[in-house]
Image (cartoon, rainbow, N blue to C red; front, side, top):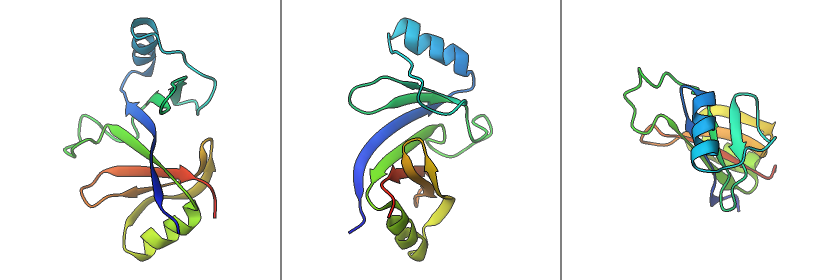
Length: 122
């Protein structure tokens, strides 16, 4: 059965990526990796990957709670889960695609939070 397995990636959306990278590397001691797209800095973290990224929404103009937080959840059978959510009327924000962390898609939860799910295809 397709199901969510739990949080597997946390990213903070920041307005100044380079300044944020400096703080997290120089002040907190995190080490950036070569993994991730050009608009993000992914760190070498041991429990759950952690990243900083440029916003994909207007943070200053948003009134939505938690809009600057990107929550990624691991899942099994991403395509099957996508179809089930779509068929159940869940708003699909981004259709499935093959990304650096596996088969990936994004949905909006009932409260307006964006959830990105990634994992195995199928």
